Length: 234
Ligand SMILES: CC(C)(COP(=O)(O)OP(=O)(O)OC[C@H]1O[C@@H](n2cnc3c(N)ncnc32)[C@H](O)[C@@H]1OP(=O)(O)O)[C@@H](O)C(=O)NCCC(=O)NCCS
Image 1 (tube, rainbow, N blue to C red):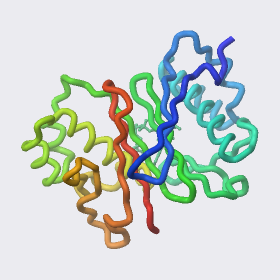
Image 2: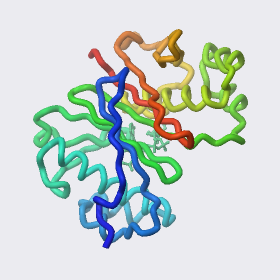
Image 3: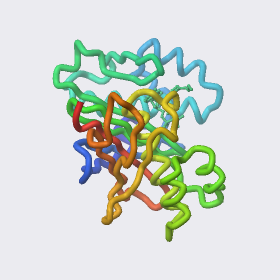
Image 4: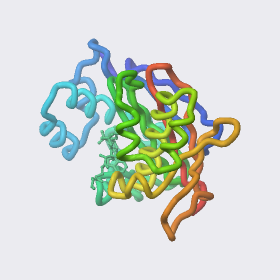
């Protein structure tokens, strides 16, 4: 019988962000939904019912169960007892009554992989994308990237690699804020310092500043790009 322990998970300490990154795969054929479904609460089971495809069902159920087991270790609560609340735009949070140490987390999945970032008391966001070689990156950048990001891509020695780094860093930043794509993608720009470390270069928001944010893009596997954003100062 497959169980939560059968989903291999790697823990990756980050050099540039005060957060931990946990990654793994949810698409192994031996994993049976029943073995993970038992961890889910009623709200989650209803959502599982609404998933249209088998892939979506497996993704949600296995990753949510994995998230519960991971957070249980941080919170010292049994996985199925964790209560989630949701922000206006769907960002999940741990119920504050159970979260005495202020654990923040973010979840992302793509093509069989998942990533979960966890921080202590700091807003965190994670994104993961499969590195798709055939993607029309310049066309996508033209529509969604800030001017400085487009210039960076034009000059880059590795436009495809840099495209996925910028894209995932932008989405990780939006997910940390909980705004999703409701905050326009061209209102902020991701850049890199001389050592190639990603950073927020511009943020058009009078209530926030680039100095409040740290970004990290650890090399995890050549098939994927993962970025983490942490708000280091409120
Ligand atoms: C959040 C969002 C960026 C996710 O992007 P995605 O590429 O489809 O999916 P990802 O795999 O990266 O992330 C999905 C996870 O993000 C989390 N999530 C959902 N809404 C979120 C939000 N508003 N902020 C941060 N995280 C969110 C959930 O944990 C979700 O996984 P789960 O439901 O299985 O637990 C996108 O769906 C979004 O923008 N949602 C907000 C709604 C919105 O703004 N709509 C547009 C209005 S203009």
